[in-house]
Image 1 (cartoon, rainbow, N blue to C red):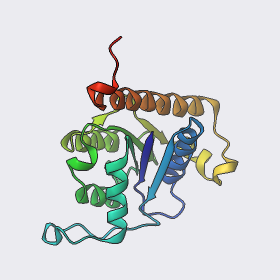
Image 2: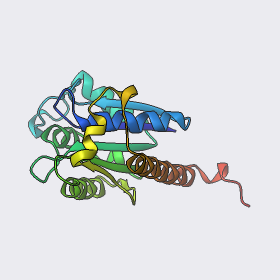
Image 3: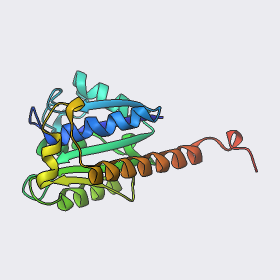
Length: 192
């Protein structure tokens, strides 16, 4: 399966982006293809309805990746009880063509305990884009963020959080497989 991860931070060493990379590595280890679109490294122009139809090179790549994706992971830091501005801007550029009937996993990193407000908002946006929210979401906060302060290969993740990340990613992949199987033409689904 093809999974696109949209990392929505505008910070070079964001723990949310490191969490996105970690989840991406777990997904790849399960044999799936992962495209990470990092909004810090690949900024998008500010959305304006007046510019509808004017395409930016990076936006073309993002849109095509999402059209081809079987599942999507949206990752954000939580800022003042909400998602990041760069992720909201990216979502404003996108539409139902990119999310319709695709499973979406919402992920956040918060300076506080957990990023429930940002996750709730992401799930509302996913519904408006006609995506399918994964029943589980993932949030790290407080001291858990310290586990992602090193480089990807040097993470010292506590067993509890590692188990939770693995469980949530597996649940998302199971949902994606289920939806992907249902979205195939009827002729390719043999009657049992």
